[in-house]
Image 1 (cartoon, one colour):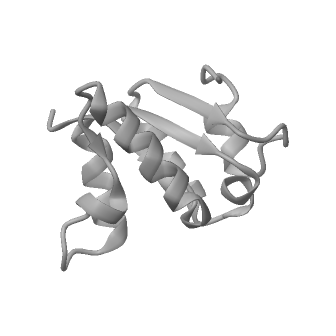
Image 2: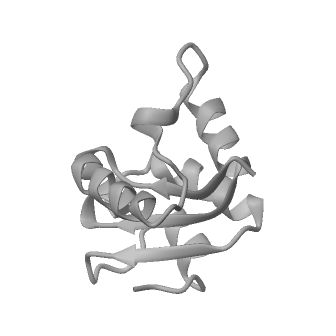
Image 3: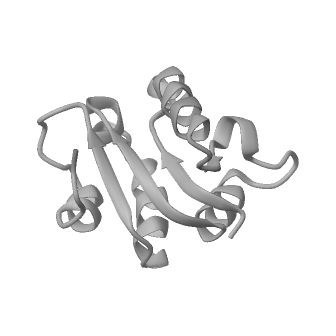
Length: 110
């Protein structure tokens, strides 16, 4: 595996995700951070799928923006299909919307 952690986040929380990535990498955990690590010239969905495949686990930065972003349902489904560990870092108490409930309901949450 090329990465220890795939970070899933909404575009509105990119700065927060960047800080989480920096914190984890300070402790020598190699993170796939889409803004930085997505290869140029390939479709977004393909790059995300490859990032998930090349990671040992995923962390979902769960916020209201994440919950309301239906386009993240595809990313979350890809994480679910990978059958790799997922941790939810919840910054909202909102109930999971749409496909998020299916994939996140049994994931550990901090």
